[in-house]
Image 1 (cartoon, rainbow, N blue to C red):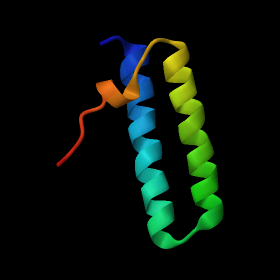
Image 2: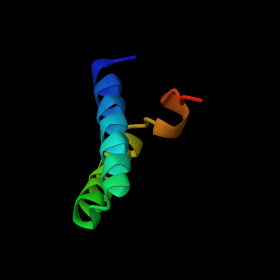
Image 3: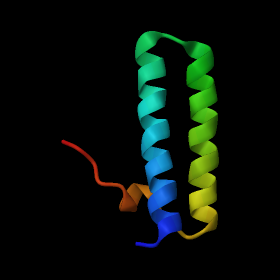
Length: 60
């Protein structure tokens, strides 16, 4: 895995975690910001041929 792929996947994981925390805390504004960030990161990944759904390990 190259540095770009590793970096974008890590940023996606971080954004997913931040979104989850914002939703849990009830912070609607922060959740919207994090959702937007996540969408942007997923778009960037897709534009570069990285499929985050297939590339990210999922915990049980």
